[in-house]
Image 1 (tube, one colour):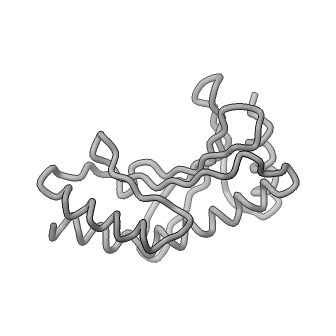
Image 2: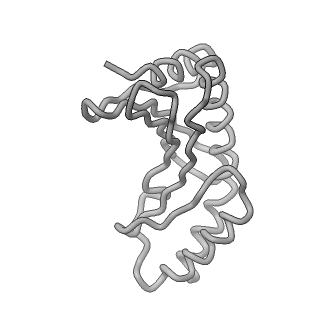
Length: 145
């Protein structure tokens, strides 16, 4: 059974006609996954992850660009991710241990139920805009790095 926050997010996304689904990879995690394709970004899945019945939600994009960054390109990619982290207030770009790029944001633990769905909708829109703008410079760092 999905956690309370997962259901609240799903209900709001349904109301706002945002295509999504609920996933429960195990008994300790439930998430809402909503995907988008922009002008530059293609097939990006944004996960709203909840691990308990509180309203502390983690927003994640795992494996942005669906590739592993080659070791010889990692320094250039890290420099670009740091530049993006300084540019964008609401998200954090990371190079993971498995050499994939993720995008992250954590909602406040004290987020009210009444505002949770709308805040997640706003974060989804911000993720779409920021990622769509950022993927070109990340790809360029991989190609030319």
